[in-house]
Image (cartoon, rainbow, N blue to C red; front, side, top):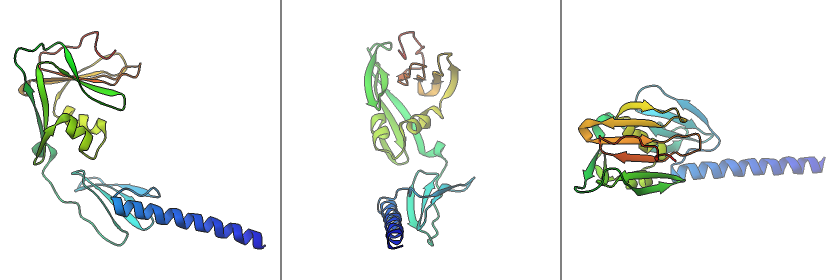
Length: 204
């Protein structure tokens, strides 16, 4: 009987420790708790709430994330639509080849290539202006989400029959973006001016 009680006490101690540590990391770092139930919300300024045992983690539509105690109500700030707060532009270089590419940024085995006639890819996120590589590496979101912010503002042109490589363009921005998604696992990205076309040596 004593042995069974000891085992129960050990299990309870471990569970309490896990709950306490999970709560602390969520509150201190504004992270989502591991022990949670996600409540997806439609509309409003809140995208979803991760409901933990003692804390709630709010993910706002403006990408702000806040963790509060369970009894604390939080309202995400209402911001303008993303079309008004997010933009980008290319700084072009004269007398450079628009067909050759430079290795611009690599993360998690994915590389962004800029055509040599592009000096820099600038992103405007709210009041902040930064290079694309800074945007991807510092903004609190995934690589895919960062690229989607851009492709959402481009015209979808075509999808190749190679696993899902997509071609996007926008004449007003003088940009073409090719997002590789081949069966061989290649998910690199090519950025060029509006005249750029898909070539067989891409996405290899």
